[in-house]
Image 1 (cartoon, one colour):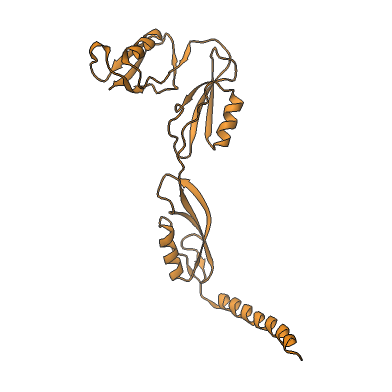
Image 2 (tube, rainbow, N blue to C red):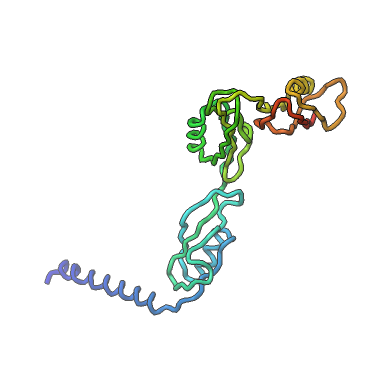
Length: 228
């Protein structure tokens, strides 16, 4: 028998013995409770599970407003039986990518919803009477450019195409206080500043209601402005 024929016969035999030995080792090894690694960093989880001769596998990552690389969930669960050399799958946190609210006012409802879907923003749509064409976005919360939370979500106000006395609160930030007061007065809104403003000087640095909110003309209302 030539040497290469011997090798061809010998290698499968050795592979079979190795596989049989490994399976036998798994079967014979005693089971124990899976350690709890939820809340640990990935490196801490690897150290603790490796000490038990368990393998760590990252199952998925999820955006969270917390330190990246933290174990959020695990399979098997803590306390479930497991054997050495078996895998523990973990879900870890991923650094949230901060995004600003897109400008959706003036768009059709369909276009706004498509844009939000692309950006993975959850929408809550409310239909109201408004003079704007039907199914047009007339207001949004938060205002365009504002940082969105986790998960990102927005509220859209969509016109039903009926005339009404609703108006969208504009952003008065960085506007001179005299101009802001004049516009609010035209809408029948009373203005209250956080401090006495002499000679109507200064600019608006904060406001309530927030930009994008809906206000109804003729209805008693007060706007609170912070002047800097």
